[in-house]
Amino acid sequence: MNYKTFFNEAKLKGITESELTISGSYNISIELFESQVSKYNISESKLFSARGIIDGKLGFANTEEDGKPGITFLVNQIVNNSKLIEKDSNPFIFKGSKKYKKKNLYSTKLDEYPMEKKVARLYEIEQKIKEYDKRIFQIEGVEYSESRDTFAMYNSHGLKLKQGSNCYVYVASIAVRGENDEVKTGFKLFFDNDPEKFDVDKFVKELCDDALNKLGGTPCKSGKYKCVLSGKVTASLMHPYVASSSSEEVQK
Image (cartoon, rainbow, N blue to C red):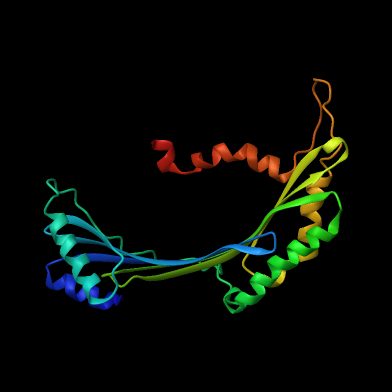
């Protein structure tokens, strides 16, 4: 969608100030189960959102339609929605800050990494898990997911902002069996946006050891003990408080 065309059409409709944001998302999800690809999904979406002030009232609009039809829809919806506003609340479109900090959250290496290699890694992970220890009797799943998000914001005051981020995740889970048919499970996740940082051998070792080290555990007597919490346990304890970091959730 051409933001300049949007602002020109908005101005012709009497919209004095306006803002356009473009959000894009691209996702890949591949899962391997018993040496077969059990899931292979690719999805892509784009959302255009706009705000505008006309006759002292602020109108909003959203659409997934690109090009001229999308622009016309956004402008007309802003005009129509503004008419539903009964009270003038002195709306404004923020012109923008003087400076913005630049952050590098996007890796071109991930885009350049072939899909064939991404899938091949899943098979490699699975094979090395099978060879790691005879007590591993089930590989519950090996999965790869990837996401790419883009965001752009423009306004009629001349603001032009763009942001992009991408990442990939490898996830695997297994079940192990010890003496007396004792069964334990292990889980491992690797998250990054540089394919070269993924170490298959290290990933498999940490995954398998996570499950195998649980074998032979016995209950202890009730009491007060000093302990060291693993990263997974700490994350689990902190999870209920994460929502409180959002002011919107707190207010609700």
